[in-house]
Amino acid sequence: MTIRYSVAACQTDLANPVDRRGMRANTDRILSMIDSAVAGAAPFLPVRLIVFPEFAHSAPVFPTAAELIQKLAIPIPNEHTERLQQKAKELDVYIQSGSMLEADPKWPGHVFNSTCLIGPQGVLYKYRKVNTWIPYEVHTSPHDLEGYDEPLFPVADTPIGRLGCAICYDWLFPEALRQLTANGAEVLVRVSAYMDPWGATEPMAWWTVVNRCRALENTAYVVAANQGASLKHYPPYSWPGGSQVVDFDGRLLAEASPGPGERIVVAPVDISALRHERATRRGHHMLAHLRTEAYPVYQQHQYPPSLSDESSTQLSYEKNNLLIDEAKKKIRS
Image (cartoon, rainbow, N blue to C red):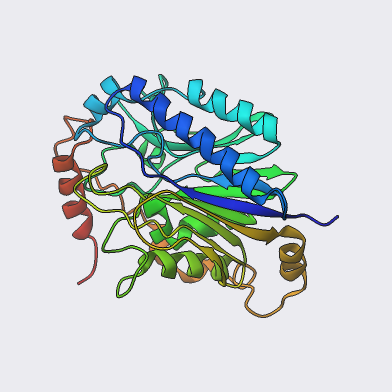
């Protein structure tokens, strides 16, 4: 059976909520953009997957986890995921939500940076950012919680292929996307708020370099939605957008022009072609060629290190800096 459809990477330029009520306006706009993405592609190859950026629903606008939990964090599922599910069912599409700040009663005192893949049948997976952008981000990585027993890198097997997601800074760690691919992912979804100067333009086009490299080294499509917020909406950074779709050989299939502002970019994805390539390719099949035992760096724990004073489990900018300094002591100079 041929599986071929269009994907839409949608970047937002929204004011960041400072309380839970403010999230509704962002979700209103996200739903409108979904309608636009589907309508714009209707005469062509229909859109089946729609991706939004990191912080599209809410952003870490407070400096401590305690404030985020008090003012912005919400459980998942919630009213926003329910509205997205209704839209997914109405249009028969799959939606990778923009990230939101998640509170889970199972883990009191912690807040997660989370995104959901939502289809007509509901939430198919919830992904919690594993590699938080330290020292600034005070979310908890699920990796760091003793006794955490949910999959760190879930993959959903859907009628449009096997989909997996990682958030922003995760993509600077090739291991994260390698694990998603090892778990079966064919489309790697990037939910990002990638800021200048590491953005979508030379001389430091990290955004493009990383998207293309993760695609080719995993023989997977990449659908990458980046934050397009203007400086006034989310200081102290400017946000370059440049949302992209990349094929499994690293070719750019579509790209939004760099710069802040809303954009929707649409490109075709051919899962049947990808599966044929993975099945028949001998050379440049990096997952099949992986010599796992060659890398002892992965056989020892690195982060987070233990501190002599662990009196506070609450993450903060100051504590993140202490942990980073301790971790750096383990690195050979």
